[in-house]
Length: 243
Ligand code: MG
Image (cartoon, rainbow, N blue to C red; front, side):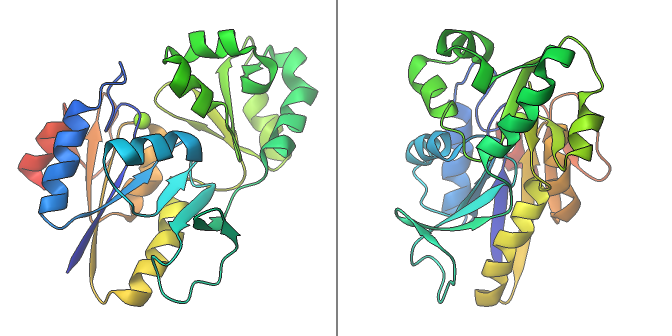
């Protein structure tokens, strides 16, 4: 039986100070045990490519909260999906500029601050990342991030405009009608065509990870939140004790 584990990145594989040593330790152990490691994050393709190098993985990955599945070309047989660079891409979300147009229309009313109306200096401050990582975060394709707002209620307006808001580890993501669980379903369909038996695992810390837990056979939850049926762990290394 093939074991596939879906990982959130922020505050899961990478801690709040962007340290990844524990995450790397866990990923390497799981790889030795034959696990397929899948990144499923609100992060952009560019950011995830950075982390794929760090974790030394060449598996498919799911970007911007289930907005697109990137599959290295040739990874699955007979894939009928558009080609982009070295990947086949399945898009589930909507283009970034469409989202920004909607936000632009309501930003004054709600005092919204997001990538497209912030300077790079402001973005760096919000994210607290290195310059290199912040640059990769600005390379957005399918979702915006609300860093700050003055008035609530914008979620409902955005919903009426066909967008969804999802709470991540730190910020609110605005995107199309998708989530990490839908991205996971789409990718698992490709695996199921080639593998008779799969056991699915998931690990995350935020409300945007709950759709992954819904679908996994075994889930791990870090941090303060609760979700029925998950195994609560206080750091990522603990996952190895329970898997
Ligand atoms: Mg997270």
